[in-house]
Amino acid sequence: MKPTSRVTGLLAAALVAGLTGASGMSVAQAASARALPSVNMEATVKAAQIDPRRADETRTPGAKASVLLVEKALRDRRLLDGQWVDGYFGSTTITAYAKYQKSLGYKGLAANGLPGKTSLVKLGAGRFKVTHTIVPGGRVSVDGGVVNTRTRSMLAEAKRLFGRRLVLDQGSYNPGGDPTSVGTHDGGGVVDISVKGMNAATRTAAIRALRRVGFAAWVRDPSQDDWPWHIHAVAISDTDLSRQAQRQVGDYYLGFNGLSGRGPDDGPKVAIRTWEEYRRR
Image (cartoon, rainbow, N blue to C red; front, side, top):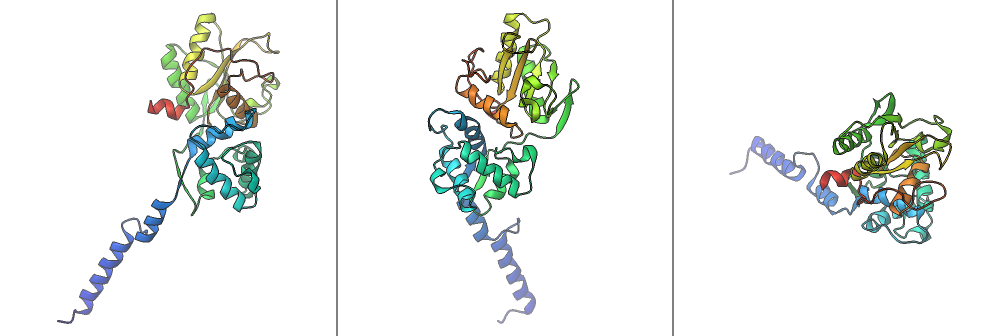
């Protein structure tokens, strides 16, 4: 029996539905998307903070494959010379990524050389998919200062571990607010915390709590510079970090104190992890 036009139409519609699926993506497109290699954003951002501070060309563990994919994409956009496609997210790759961000029309913190989620997804279109994304979140007020929601969550958890309140002396996104900060507070993820009423043991306990949740944190004292006693804390892998704060995170991973003299780390030894890693523990 010859099918009627109505039956033929229904069969055609069923065939199209089977090929496209509920998302509107064809089977071929879906298969292609699944076949794309992955860039682990957490590993890539970590490498971008640590690698430029290394004295050698040791790759950040777990980041090489993702960094290579990013570098190849930058090379193909003529932003990175082929000799630097090596899985090492050093200063040359940072500069190339910042140029890419600027090519998208980004300025300021959005062009700081650290891969943000939006720019990384755009760079990977048709080349790679992005996993383990990091999002700083919007800006909020804490103790009269400004931080992003990721930093606020980290501070709240550190406070819970510490068992008492942590009061900010200075927040983030504060360009020129304190000359002794040399630009570390210009971006997100960086806070200074009051140590008023704390003795040495309590200060150490506060640093330990901050480090556990993903801050690079140190006690600062007047012998180091023209500043009062305080705690300086940098949220590792915050993609809004200023260049100066990025360097402090890299130095923290490499065992330094985050100051320009790159002295040895003087805080309690805590397993270094990001906020995302802490939440998965």
